[in-house]
Length: 284
Image (cartoon, rainbow, N blue to C red):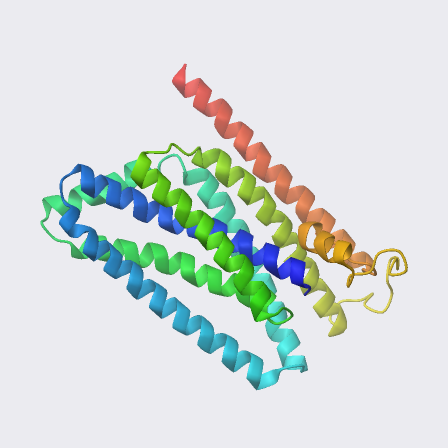
């Protein structure tokens, strides 16, 4: 995987997962502050810290073991393919899930905070923070594994740190100055971009399966435009990261990429329009 792909992919992954995780923590802290219970912040942050430490340790260990155990082998290709497919499933599911639940998130968390305060127990808040951030962190580990084997650490960290800083800045602004972010629109834009990333991961899985002789057509490129724009060039690298460009793709790669992206975006945006219509009808 080329540098532009790694930077863009890790940026989008950390931006989305960071926004979702930090947004929920921000709403929790806002609700606690409004209830005059800032003393419970430490329990929320304790849950966040525990989740990050656990997921980080698991991710580093899994990456180190898998990469050193069968680097440049058939087993690594199988492992990469499994991670690609798992990342596509989780990424697609969570993109649709977050789009569907973005509006009701605050009210659901308000109920959790009210129950915790009424029961005079901070443990549920710590567990909620742990589960919320832990889920996002584990998803991030899986997504990064899908692009980590063929990219450099610098590329991954560059996109990851940038995406994480942007997500934390937005969440801090929401908490500090009461900035009203249109979550539904935000997750629509980021979700659509991540559907492109998911399509690229699926195409990578297809190519791996062709190289493993599980799927046919691996030895025949649909076209070869390396003499015009190769994958290794700067522009080809950028286009590969943005739209899944490949100078010499197979027919099955192109077909899978196009079909997944067409059906995925059609379902994603048709769901958005359906929710908007139902929302207007309910308001009327």
